[in-house]
Image (cartoon, rainbow over all chains, first blue to last red; front, side, top):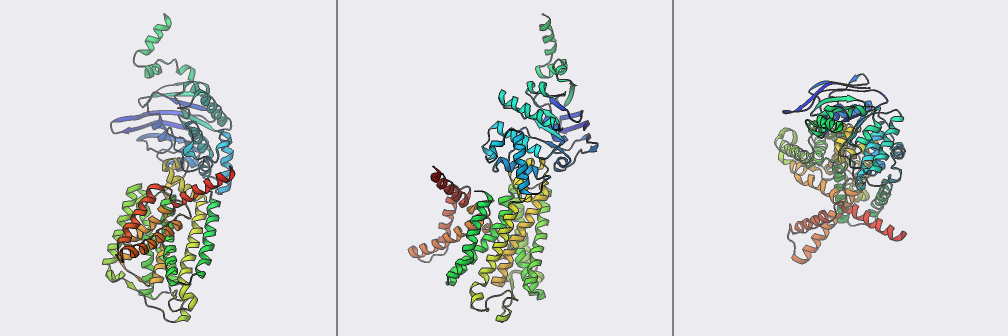
Length: 246
Length: 338
């Protein structure tokens, strides 16, 4: 469904993403992990059209989308959420979701009905009239998810929708995300909450300092020495192996 | 208050404005109302782009002035009928707006940069109107000839020598109808897909783009609609005063009036510009009376008084008079329920 091949982006001398190649097959949940500053969000921005890649190819359903405008990419069915949530703060929850539904629904009343439906899907049905600016962090994350869903996406890019949530809230969101996948939406997610990554994703990519250093099933990834070093520092893998032997 | 509540309030106001003046015979008060509604239309033009769209223009005079100049020049130079000229005045202004919008939005100018570029355009047009003598009559301005034939009053869009009713109320109802149409247009916009997308762009442009909204196109539409509304005020001005000159058309006074009314009345609300305009002119009149009573006729003193009230409103009513009314309404209803 999504093919990213050899994509690079430099900011001045900094290689934010270099030669990234990954593929997201239809109907799966794929995760993208890596330490802070690894370039995960930049890669999302490249895929969703907010930043133009210096080189490389991005194909969505066989169509090249590299360098296309974000709203056009969204209209094709590829939508992203933001790590730092961006609610339309002066609008109600229903209005927030309805704006996103307007991408394919022309009538205001129909869009608001659709918004109520989507809100139910992410467990916000009691909050429709609340001002988005007054939501808690968990509420805002859900709203971010609901808005993205309202655009009727085929591929959903989720940027840390679980960061800052407590364990109960993480469990709830994990169920919501799985539910979304079951309706036929493919998902690529960036996540630090490993418990969620392990339970949700079918396949993982690990990014470090702009480069993909590992890929595979989540269970194997956590044992990959390259990955352990990226997170814990040089030599960590060896030390852990020695400790386990002892 | 939801949009239905706003519409209800608007309807009540409109009925009052439609009938009220018939009970007033004083020409001075009719003039006062005319001026108030005129600024309310000017303000709504600004409100569409800034209040709903978050694009703060500081040179809305460019739309008022261009509308007025086209309206005046088509009659003055080519003898066009004002009813015909008016469509060209509004569409010509819309073209100018599209040009300014394209240049600003294509290159992503936002916030104070957009304010500055619109201010610059207004000043540039000011200079052009003054210096392109052969086209605009330069600093002398354009003076239209007075129609003295009562039977032609409506055909000529001039009511000075019309029958007693038209002479007194003709221009009041002209600006009232313009107000009615432009406010209805704004209400329809705010409840449409386009309106929702415009507000989304105001709230967070990047999030709007991520959700499939073509921010550039939405802002272009908004600036065009804003120009149509603002230029209709220009058309009215020319027909009422039969005169336009560069300072009136493109000077900062009109730009400032256009933004004060909605800011005081309530940004991004339909009735905001009307409330604001009533407040500004009401306070202005009262200030004048009070000052004349206490210190005699000292021109300019009323402006100081006026400025102080403005600061108080801006400091304590961030959501304008509309916000204040809404708060009072909610408190009243809360008490009633409890």
